Length: 138
Image (cartoon, rainbow, N blue to C red; front, side):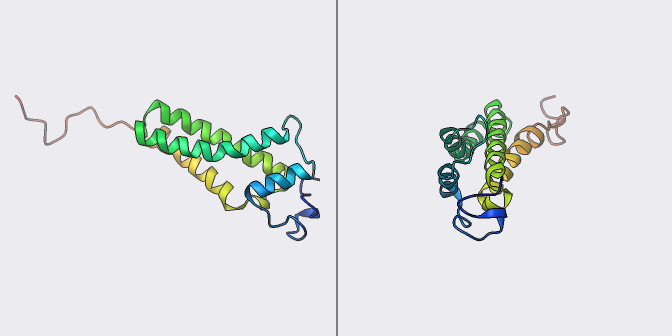
């Protein structure tokens, strides 16, 4: 059941709709009346478009606030939630093989932003003065 999209039974990679990616895949899911409970066609489309919006917001927050800013960290968490939700919803309806490289790139980018803003940027330098500045002004 979860692998039937536009006439392709079993996720074999053959049949009508077997090479669909992106919005064409979402349209095919909607056209074949595939759905998850609580996820209508409109919600699926909105979720699909939130992925690039979260990616753009992450670049803006990173550029304006830096990696350690609160805004970047919030956007990083939102980007991970949106990317995971979108991949989980589409994959449950069509199978992971149909997602293509864009979905995995979105997950990788969101994960990299979380690691960069929560782990790497959170490391603080030592409180000791640097070697070059230790004896100045005294």
